[in-house]
Image (cartoon, rainbow, N blue to C red; front, side, top):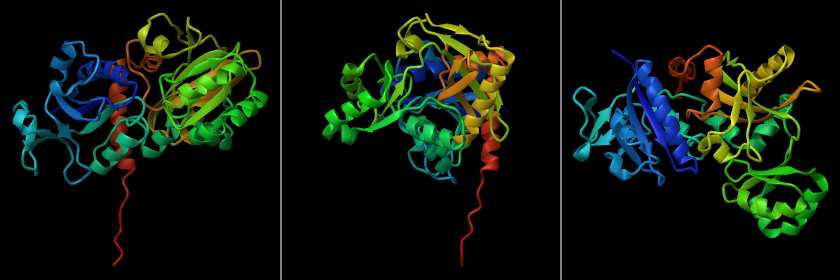
Length: 381
């Protein structure tokens, strides 16, 4: 009997469409890997919709999840009743896939593990991971703490500094201070920052809310844009002339790094459109680094992965200076893109692990992590 994998995608973040596209790619790879896949789509409002085996859903080339896509469903924060609960009134669940639940009006779909292909808020920040921890269902990717740390770039940088991992420095600005002390903050940033600089939300992904400013006059508008996505913003010096390099990490206690790849965007920087809309960005895998610098990037990627409490997978982004032989971590993504032009699966494919093999490894790591993370609760009498 094949393992049944629950696939969750869509979600409440600004990366909803990307998550749907990643979900389709992971679904195709999961079927090829031999898994029995059942899908759950999350609407932009946060409603869970049961999609069955996903074949019919993806046949329509969907861009987002709507309530009309299937019956409502939910996951209980109860480890004694794990699974996906589907409303019976419109469930239409295939024979043999469901078992009687302990709740009236629903059927329970048993799953052996869940792959949350959810980018951004409520999916990559520890929120869905917390629900799955409470449900007792093994899941792919970083645990609650590692997810929350890596979602917040400011916290990530502080941890990397503590562990001695070279990284891109940044100044942090809180939204509540920005609202009351704009002129003071702008003056301080103009004095402290080298330009051009990047302004970005501390806790967003896919370059949403990110602006490149060439002088202090652009800071105000850029900060206003960043604060649409988070309550904290970062201002970083642009790493002009350095190579933009990424490295994929896979594993739990003993993570491995892929061959690095280089990003060559044709736009001003590697923004949302360059990542997901326009198929114009050049991806060079392996990156044009000498053996020593390649090894340095891989070692730093694994070090950053461990320092931030990651498990399963992460894509570690770098700026690399071949002249000095230095590599600086920019950020970590605990649920990287899995679209047809995404770097994480491409780097592993060049490293010798095809997409379906990667998905199989990630599910195996999820089951391993569930067993390793078990905690005995002793009741004092």
